[in-house]
Length: 413
Ligand code: GLV
Ligand code: MN
Ligand code: MN
Image 1 (cartoon, rainbow, N blue to C red):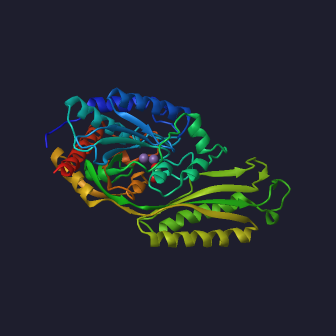
Image 2: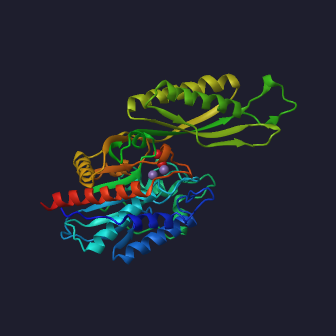
Image 3: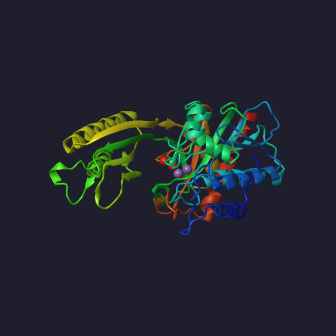
Protein backbone atom coordinates (compact mmCIF):
# COMPACT_ATOMS: atom_id res chain seq x y z
CA UNK A 1 0.00 0.00 0.00
CA UNK A 2 1.28 3.48 -0.79
CA UNK A 3 1.66 5.80 2.18
CA UNK A 4 -1.16 8.21 1.33
CA UNK A 5 -1.62 11.19 3.65
CA UNK A 6 -4.71 13.19 4.45
CA UNK A 7 -4.49 17.02 4.55
CA UNK A 8 -4.88 17.85 8.26
CA UNK A 9 -5.27 21.60 7.75
CA UNK A 10 -7.97 21.14 5.13
CA UNK A 11 -9.87 18.78 7.44
CA UNK A 12 -9.70 21.24 10.32
CA UNK A 13 -10.78 24.18 8.15
CA UNK A 14 -13.72 22.14 6.90
CA UNK A 15 -14.76 21.20 10.45
CA UNK A 16 -14.64 24.84 11.53
CA UNK A 17 -16.48 26.03 8.41
CA UNK A 18 -19.29 23.51 8.91
CA UNK A 19 -19.51 24.39 12.61
CA UNK A 20 -20.75 27.85 11.59
CA UNK A 21 -24.03 26.27 10.46
CA UNK A 22 -26.01 26.34 13.71
CA UNK A 23 -23.15 27.83 15.76
CA UNK A 24 -24.07 28.69 19.37
CA UNK A 25 -22.74 31.53 21.49
CA UNK A 26 -20.88 29.06 23.71
CA UNK A 27 -18.89 27.58 20.82
CA UNK A 28 -21.05 24.56 20.07
CA UNK A 29 -23.66 23.70 17.47
CA UNK A 30 -27.46 23.45 17.62
CA UNK A 31 -28.41 21.72 14.37
CA UNK A 32 -31.40 19.53 15.10
CA UNK A 33 -32.34 17.03 12.45
CA UNK A 34 -34.63 18.12 9.58
CA UNK A 35 -34.55 21.81 10.52
CA UNK A 36 -33.55 24.59 8.12
CA UNK A 37 -30.02 24.35 9.51
CA UNK A 38 -29.94 20.64 8.69
CA UNK A 39 -31.01 21.52 5.14
CA UNK A 40 -28.22 24.10 4.97
CA UNK A 41 -25.51 21.68 6.07
CA UNK A 42 -26.85 18.99 3.73
CA UNK A 43 -26.82 21.42 0.78
CA UNK A 44 -23.25 22.38 1.68
CA UNK A 45 -22.16 18.73 2.00
CA UNK A 46 -23.78 17.82 -1.32
CA UNK A 47 -22.03 20.70 -3.10
CA UNK A 48 -18.62 19.67 -1.68
CA UNK A 49 -19.15 16.10 -2.85
CA UNK A 50 -20.31 17.14 -6.30
CA UNK A 51 -17.27 19.39 -6.65
CA UNK A 52 -15.17 16.21 -6.35
CA UNK A 53 -17.21 14.54 -9.07
CA UNK A 54 -19.02 12.23 -6.62
CA UNK A 55 -22.58 11.21 -7.40
CA UNK A 56 -24.96 12.02 -4.55
CA UNK A 57 -28.10 9.96 -3.85
CA UNK A 58 -30.73 10.36 -1.13
CA UNK A 59 -32.98 7.59 0.17
CA UNK A 60 -36.61 7.70 1.33
CA UNK A 61 -35.61 8.65 4.90
CA UNK A 62 -33.07 11.29 3.92
CA UNK A 63 -29.85 9.27 4.26
CA UNK A 64 -27.27 10.75 1.84
CA UNK A 65 -24.70 8.69 -0.10
CA UNK A 66 -21.84 10.26 -2.08
CA UNK A 67 -20.11 7.73 -4.32
CA UNK A 68 -16.72 7.54 -6.00
CA UNK A 69 -16.38 4.69 -8.50
CA UNK A 70 -13.75 1.97 -8.08
CA UNK A 71 -11.89 -0.16 -10.61
CA UNK A 72 -14.43 -2.95 -10.05
CA UNK A 73 -17.96 -1.58 -10.07
CA UNK A 74 -19.33 -5.07 -9.28
CA UNK A 75 -17.92 -4.82 -5.75
CA UNK A 76 -20.24 -3.35 -3.10
CA UNK A 77 -18.94 0.01 -1.90
CA UNK A 78 -16.74 0.58 1.12
CA UNK A 79 -18.69 3.12 3.17
CA UNK A 80 -17.45 5.74 5.63
CA UNK A 81 -19.50 8.35 7.45
CA UNK A 82 -21.56 9.39 10.45
CA UNK A 83 -24.14 12.15 11.02
CA UNK A 84 -24.43 15.94 10.67
CA UNK A 85 -27.31 16.48 13.12
CA UNK A 86 -26.53 17.55 16.69
CA UNK A 87 -27.99 17.76 20.16
CA UNK A 88 -29.59 21.12 21.15
CA UNK A 89 -26.35 21.98 22.97
CA UNK A 90 -24.07 19.84 20.81
CA UNK A 91 -20.37 20.20 20.14
CA UNK A 92 -18.45 20.64 16.90
CA UNK A 93 -17.24 17.04 16.58
CA UNK A 94 -19.96 14.51 17.49
CA UNK A 95 -20.96 13.12 14.10
CA UNK A 96 -19.44 15.91 12.03
CA UNK A 97 -15.94 14.48 12.42
CA UNK A 98 -17.00 11.15 10.91
CA UNK A 99 -18.62 12.74 7.85
CA UNK A 100 -16.00 15.42 7.27
CA UNK A 101 -13.05 13.07 7.77
CA UNK A 102 -14.69 10.83 5.16
CA UNK A 103 -14.89 13.88 2.88
CA UNK A 104 -11.20 14.53 3.54
CA UNK A 105 -10.41 10.91 2.62
CA UNK A 106 -12.29 11.40 -0.66
CA UNK A 107 -10.49 14.69 -1.32
CA UNK A 108 -7.11 13.04 -0.69
CA UNK A 109 -7.90 10.12 -3.02
CA UNK A 110 -9.10 12.63 -5.60
CA UNK A 111 -5.98 14.84 -5.39
CA UNK A 112 -3.70 11.84 -5.73
CA UNK A 113 -5.77 10.30 -8.50
CA UNK A 114 -5.77 7.08 -6.46
CA UNK A 115 -8.10 4.41 -7.79
CA UNK A 116 -9.55 1.99 -5.28
CA UNK A 117 -10.71 -1.50 -6.22
CA UNK A 118 -14.19 -1.03 -4.76
CA UNK A 119 -16.37 2.06 -5.04
CA UNK A 120 -16.12 4.28 -1.95
CA UNK A 121 -19.09 6.09 -0.41
CA UNK A 122 -19.59 8.75 2.24
CA UNK A 123 -22.82 8.43 4.23
CA UNK A 124 -24.65 11.12 6.18
CA UNK A 125 -27.29 9.31 8.27
CA UNK A 126 -30.51 11.16 9.19
CA UNK A 127 -31.48 11.69 12.85
CA UNK A 128 -28.68 9.87 14.61
CA UNK A 129 -29.17 11.90 17.77
CA UNK A 130 -32.82 11.19 18.46
CA UNK A 131 -32.94 14.59 20.16
CA UNK A 132 -35.83 15.78 18.01
CA UNK A 133 -37.42 12.51 16.86
CA UNK A 134 -37.10 9.46 19.12
CA UNK A 135 -35.55 6.96 18.82
CA UNK A 136 -31.94 7.72 17.95
CA UNK A 137 -30.30 6.07 14.91
CA UNK A 138 -33.72 6.13 13.26
CA UNK A 139 -32.80 6.28 9.57
CA UNK A 140 -29.84 3.90 9.78
CA UNK A 141 -32.35 1.61 11.50
CA UNK A 142 -34.59 1.82 8.43
CA UNK A 143 -31.56 1.19 6.21
CA UNK A 144 -30.82 -1.96 8.22
CA UNK A 145 -34.43 -3.18 8.22
CA UNK A 146 -34.93 -2.66 11.97
CA UNK A 147 -37.69 -0.07 11.44
CA UNK A 148 -40.06 0.38 8.50
CA UNK A 149 -39.84 3.61 6.52
CA UNK A 150 -43.45 4.32 7.53
CA UNK A 151 -42.54 4.05 11.20
CA UNK A 152 -39.71 6.57 10.75
CA UNK A 153 -41.82 8.97 8.68
CA UNK A 154 -44.58 8.94 11.30
CA UNK A 155 -42.39 9.78 14.30
CA UNK A 156 -43.40 13.16 15.78
CA UNK A 157 -41.34 15.72 17.68
CA UNK A 158 -42.60 17.24 20.96
CA UNK A 159 -44.47 19.91 18.95
CA UNK A 160 -46.30 17.28 16.90
CA UNK A 161 -44.42 17.80 13.62
CA UNK A 162 -43.65 14.54 11.87
CA UNK A 163 -40.35 13.29 10.52
CA UNK A 164 -42.00 12.73 7.10
CA UNK A 165 -43.44 16.25 6.83
CA UNK A 166 -40.18 17.85 7.93
CA UNK A 167 -38.13 15.69 5.55
CA UNK A 168 -40.38 16.81 2.65
CA UNK A 169 -40.21 20.42 3.80
CA UNK A 170 -36.41 20.55 3.68
CA UNK A 171 -36.38 18.75 0.31
CA UNK A 172 -34.51 15.62 1.37
CA UNK A 173 -37.10 12.89 0.87
CA UNK A 174 -35.28 10.88 -1.79
CA UNK A 175 -36.59 8.24 -4.13
CA UNK A 176 -34.22 5.42 -3.25
CA UNK A 177 -35.56 2.59 -1.10
CA UNK A 178 -33.64 2.57 2.18
CA UNK A 179 -31.40 -0.47 2.42
CA UNK A 180 -31.37 -1.23 -1.29
CA UNK A 181 -27.72 -0.11 -1.44
CA UNK A 182 -25.15 -2.72 -0.32
CA UNK A 183 -21.82 -2.15 1.41
CA UNK A 184 -18.82 -4.47 1.61
CA UNK A 185 -17.76 -2.59 4.75
CA UNK A 186 -18.65 0.43 6.89
CA UNK A 187 -16.08 2.45 8.86
CA UNK A 188 -17.29 5.22 11.19
CA UNK A 189 -14.81 7.62 12.77
CA UNK A 190 -16.14 9.31 15.92
CA UNK A 191 -14.91 11.07 19.02
CA UNK A 192 -14.91 8.75 22.03
CA UNK A 193 -17.33 10.96 24.02
CA UNK A 194 -15.82 9.50 27.20
CA UNK A 195 -12.62 9.85 29.24
CA UNK A 196 -10.66 6.64 28.56
CA UNK A 197 -8.38 7.49 25.61
CA UNK A 198 -7.34 10.84 27.04
CA UNK A 199 -6.64 9.36 30.48
CA UNK A 200 -4.43 6.67 28.95
CA UNK A 201 -2.66 8.98 26.50
CA UNK A 202 -3.91 6.83 23.64
CA UNK A 203 -4.69 8.40 20.26
CA UNK A 204 -6.87 5.69 18.71
CA UNK A 205 -9.71 3.59 20.09
CA UNK A 206 -10.18 0.34 18.19
CA UNK A 207 -13.89 -0.07 18.80
CA UNK A 208 -15.04 -3.61 19.54
CA UNK A 209 -18.76 -2.93 19.83
CA UNK A 210 -21.50 -0.81 21.37
CA UNK A 211 -23.36 -1.33 24.63
CA UNK A 212 -27.12 -1.91 24.75
CA UNK A 213 -29.53 1.01 25.11
CA UNK A 214 -33.18 1.12 26.23
CA UNK A 215 -35.42 4.18 26.17
CA UNK A 216 -38.68 4.53 28.10
CA UNK A 217 -41.39 7.20 28.24
CA UNK A 218 -43.41 7.77 31.39
CA UNK A 219 -46.48 9.96 31.95
CA UNK A 220 -47.62 10.44 35.55
CA UNK A 221 -51.12 11.78 36.11
CA UNK A 222 -52.30 13.45 39.32
CA UNK A 223 -54.55 16.47 39.73
CA UNK A 224 -53.99 20.19 39.09
CA UNK A 225 -54.89 21.94 42.36
CA UNK A 226 -54.37 25.18 44.25
CA UNK A 227 -51.04 25.31 46.12
CA UNK A 228 -52.41 27.52 48.87
CA UNK A 229 -55.58 25.67 49.73
CA UNK A 230 -54.92 21.98 49.16
CA UNK A 231 -53.76 20.20 52.34
CA UNK A 232 -50.63 18.08 51.89
CA UNK A 233 -52.51 14.85 52.60
CA UNK A 234 -55.02 15.48 49.80
CA UNK A 235 -52.58 16.26 46.98
CA UNK A 236 -51.97 14.24 43.83
CA UNK A 237 -48.65 15.83 42.95
CA UNK A 238 -47.31 14.32 39.72
CA UNK A 239 -43.99 16.15 39.99
CA UNK A 240 -43.36 14.77 43.48
CA UNK A 241 -43.91 11.27 42.08
CA UNK A 242 -41.57 12.02 39.17
CA UNK A 243 -38.89 13.34 41.53
CA UNK A 244 -38.93 10.12 43.55
CA UNK A 245 -38.83 7.95 40.43
CA UNK A 246 -35.95 10.00 38.99
CA UNK A 247 -33.98 9.46 42.18
CA UNK A 248 -34.65 5.72 41.85
CA UNK A 249 -33.49 5.67 38.18
CA UNK A 250 -30.14 6.99 39.35
CA UNK A 251 -30.00 4.43 42.17
CA UNK A 252 -30.84 1.53 39.83
CA UNK A 253 -27.89 2.45 37.60
CA UNK A 254 -25.62 2.77 40.64
CA UNK A 255 -26.69 -0.70 41.81
CA UNK A 256 -25.23 -2.07 38.55
CA UNK A 257 -22.18 0.17 38.38
CA UNK A 258 -19.61 0.62 37.04
CA UNK A 259 -20.97 -0.60 33.69
CA UNK A 260 -24.59 0.57 33.98
CA UNK A 261 -25.78 4.13 33.41
CA UNK A 262 -29.26 5.57 33.83
CA UNK A 263 -30.60 9.04 33.07
CA UNK A 264 -33.78 11.10 33.00
CA UNK A 265 -32.88 13.76 30.43
CA UNK A 266 -36.23 15.18 29.30
CA UNK A 267 -39.08 16.25 31.57
CA UNK A 268 -42.25 18.23 30.94
CA UNK A 269 -44.19 19.46 33.97
CA UNK A 270 -47.79 20.56 33.47
CA UNK A 271 -49.20 23.11 33.82
CA UNK A 272 -45.83 24.43 35.07
CA UNK A 273 -47.22 27.30 37.08
CA UNK A 274 -45.76 28.22 40.47
CA UNK A 275 -49.07 28.15 42.30
CA UNK A 276 -50.58 25.04 40.75
CA UNK A 277 -49.78 21.56 42.11
CA UNK A 278 -48.51 19.75 38.98
CA UNK A 279 -51.21 17.49 37.55
CA UNK A 280 -49.16 15.77 34.86
CA UNK A 281 -45.50 15.03 34.22
CA UNK A 282 -43.90 13.43 31.16
CA UNK A 283 -40.32 12.21 31.30
CA UNK A 284 -37.90 9.88 29.54
CA UNK A 285 -35.55 7.23 30.91
CA UNK A 286 -32.31 6.13 29.20
CA UNK A 287 -30.66 2.92 30.52
CA UNK A 288 -27.41 1.49 29.07
CA UNK A 289 -25.30 -1.59 29.80
CA UNK A 290 -23.16 -3.98 27.72
CA UNK A 291 -25.36 -7.00 28.65
CA UNK A 292 -29.04 -7.59 27.89
CA UNK A 293 -29.59 -9.60 31.10
CA UNK A 294 -28.58 -6.61 33.22
CA UNK A 295 -30.82 -4.31 31.17
CA UNK A 296 -33.69 -6.77 31.83
CA UNK A 297 -33.02 -6.48 35.54
CA UNK A 298 -32.84 -2.69 35.44
CA UNK A 299 -36.11 -2.61 33.52
CA UNK A 300 -37.82 -4.81 36.11
CA UNK A 301 -36.56 -2.51 38.87
CA UNK A 302 -37.87 0.56 37.03
CA UNK A 303 -41.32 -1.03 36.71
CA UNK A 304 -41.32 -2.00 40.39
CA UNK A 305 -40.30 1.54 41.33
CA UNK A 306 -43.11 3.10 39.30
CA UNK A 307 -45.75 0.95 40.99
CA UNK A 308 -44.21 1.14 44.45
CA UNK A 309 -43.66 4.90 44.46
CA UNK A 310 -46.66 6.24 42.55
CA UNK A 311 -49.60 4.26 43.90
CA UNK A 312 -49.13 5.42 47.54
CA UNK A 313 -49.07 9.00 46.23
CA UNK A 314 -52.46 8.45 44.54
CA UNK A 315 -50.91 8.92 41.12
CA UNK A 316 -51.75 7.05 37.93
CA UNK A 317 -49.09 6.45 35.28
CA UNK A 318 -48.40 5.07 31.83
CA UNK A 319 -45.01 3.66 30.93
CA UNK A 320 -43.67 2.31 27.63
CA UNK A 321 -40.32 1.03 26.46
CA UNK A 322 -40.07 2.85 23.15
CA UNK A 323 -36.65 1.63 22.03
CA UNK A 324 -34.20 -1.16 22.62
CA UNK A 325 -30.88 -1.26 20.81
CA UNK A 326 -29.12 -4.50 21.80
CA UNK A 327 -25.36 -4.69 22.41
CA UNK A 328 -23.37 -5.00 19.18
CA UNK A 329 -20.07 -6.72 18.32
CA UNK A 330 -18.20 -5.31 15.36
CA UNK A 331 -16.64 -7.31 12.50
CA UNK A 332 -13.24 -8.87 13.41
CA UNK A 333 -11.83 -8.38 9.91
CA UNK A 334 -12.55 -4.65 9.97
CA UNK A 335 -11.26 -4.31 13.53
CA UNK A 336 -8.04 -5.88 12.23
CA UNK A 337 -7.89 -3.29 9.42
CA UNK A 338 -8.21 -0.48 11.99
CA UNK A 339 -5.46 -1.96 14.15
CA UNK A 340 -3.13 -2.22 11.15
CA UNK A 341 -4.13 1.28 10.08
CA UNK A 342 -3.24 2.76 13.47
CA UNK A 343 0.11 0.94 13.60
CA UNK A 344 0.96 2.10 10.09
CA UNK A 345 0.23 5.70 11.07
CA UNK A 346 2.33 5.30 14.24
CA UNK A 347 -0.41 5.91 16.81
CA UNK A 348 -0.92 4.21 20.17
CA UNK A 349 -4.20 2.30 20.09
CA UNK A 350 -6.35 0.37 22.57
CA UNK A 351 -9.51 -1.68 22.33
CA UNK A 352 -12.64 0.08 23.58
CA UNK A 353 -16.42 -0.46 23.83
CA UNK A 354 -18.67 2.45 22.87
CA UNK A 355 -20.88 3.85 25.61
CA UNK A 356 -22.68 6.06 23.09
CA UNK A 357 -25.09 4.80 20.46
CA UNK A 358 -24.05 5.13 16.81
CA UNK A 359 -25.58 4.39 13.41
CA UNK A 360 -22.93 1.71 13.04
CA UNK A 361 -24.89 -0.37 15.59
CA UNK A 362 -27.61 -0.85 12.99
CA UNK A 363 -25.42 -0.90 9.88
CA UNK A 364 -23.54 -3.81 11.51
CA UNK A 365 -26.65 -5.94 10.92
CA UNK A 366 -26.38 -5.64 7.14
CA UNK A 367 -22.66 -5.09 6.45
CA UNK A 368 -19.34 -5.76 8.18
CA UNK A 369 -18.89 -2.63 10.29
CA UNK A 370 -16.55 -1.05 12.79
CA UNK A 371 -15.64 2.29 14.33
CA UNK A 372 -12.52 4.31 15.10
CA UNK A 373 -12.42 6.58 18.16
CA UNK A 374 -10.23 9.58 18.92
CA UNK A 375 -10.06 11.32 22.32
CA UNK A 376 -12.13 14.30 23.39
CA UNK A 377 -11.03 16.70 26.13
CA UNK A 378 -12.17 15.67 29.59
CA UNK A 379 -14.41 13.06 28.00
CA UNK A 380 -17.03 15.80 27.60
CA UNK A 381 -19.60 15.41 24.80
CA UNK A 382 -23.24 16.40 24.18
CA UNK A 383 -21.94 19.73 25.42
CA UNK A 384 -20.99 22.91 23.56
CA UNK A 385 -17.52 22.71 25.13
CA UNK A 386 -16.82 19.36 23.42
CA UNK A 387 -13.25 19.56 22.15
CA UNK A 388 -10.99 17.35 20.03
CA UNK A 389 -7.67 18.81 18.88
CA UNK A 390 -6.33 19.46 15.39
CA UNK A 391 -3.89 16.54 15.80
CA UNK A 392 -6.54 14.16 17.13
CA UNK A 393 -8.91 14.91 14.24
CA UNK A 394 -6.06 14.45 11.78
CA UNK A 395 -5.02 11.15 13.40
CA UNK A 396 -8.56 9.82 13.16
CA UNK A 397 -8.87 10.77 9.50
CA UNK A 398 -5.49 9.23 8.67
CA UNK A 399 -6.46 5.96 10.38
CA UNK A 400 -9.78 6.06 8.53
CA UNK A 401 -7.97 6.41 5.20
CA UNK A 402 -5.48 3.68 6.07
CA UNK A 403 -8.22 1.30 7.22
CA UNK A 404 -10.30 1.84 4.08
CA UNK A 405 -7.26 1.23 1.87
CA UNK A 406 -6.26 -1.86 3.87
CA UNK A 407 -9.74 -3.32 3.40
CA UNK A 408 -9.79 -2.31 -0.26
CA UNK A 409 -6.42 -3.98 -0.84
CA UNK A 410 -7.85 -7.21 0.61
CA UNK A 411 -10.86 -7.00 -1.69
CA UNK A 412 -8.54 -6.67 -4.66
CA UNK A 413 -6.28 -9.58 -3.82
C1 GLV B 1 -26.36 9.21 20.75
O1 GLV B 1 -25.74 10.25 20.69
C2 GLV B 1 -26.53 8.52 22.00
O2 GLV B 1 -25.61 7.79 22.42
O3 GLV B 1 -27.55 8.76 22.66
MN1 MN C 1 -22.59 10.85 17.24
MN1 MN D 1 -24.51 12.37 19.88
